[in-house]
Length: 233
Image (cartoon, rainbow, N blue to C red):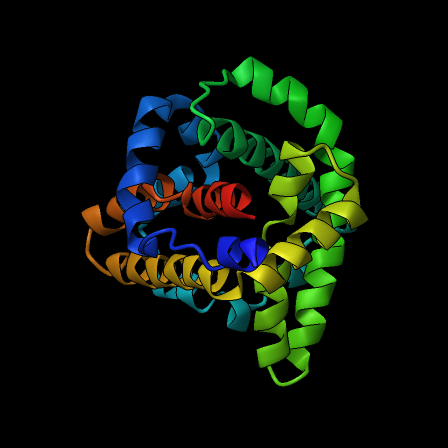
């Protein structure tokens, strides 16, 4: 009975996580800015975008047709480098989120060094998680959304509890089963924020920058829900 009461404990509205995330991000804004650097650069690029009609017909013009083999290879290497940097920033962001919700203020050097420890395990975790969700989405979408709710906390378990790939997935799955609707509410809120920021992008000049600011300010919503559910589990 005590365990059942614990699992059903009211942890408050998911919307309460928005101001909490903002306040914590504001206290440690520089690391959050760095780990979200691609979001910031994308917003800046949108502000200064001077695309022509030819640019908009990118695929129709087939710009790859006249590229040499060496140029294609260089492009592939640059893309691979982008993927690796993005993965490393994701690991740094996860560590930053876990430590920030504990009221710590980790510096960039600490985040960079600690990310070395988790880079390969986290990459494996993301590959397996992505495959699970993709398979679920293929199976009429709903199973994929359920899988997402079940495993979205795995990166936090890996960093917070120093778990391996499969132990982190198992722990996240257990949390997702016990607190499905609480986790789903946080995931739904993140989707809603993503939709809002996409719509803001249609506003000239300031829209993209405002969207990036909202994305960074609400970056801790899932991590805060993880912390709440860890306390009541």
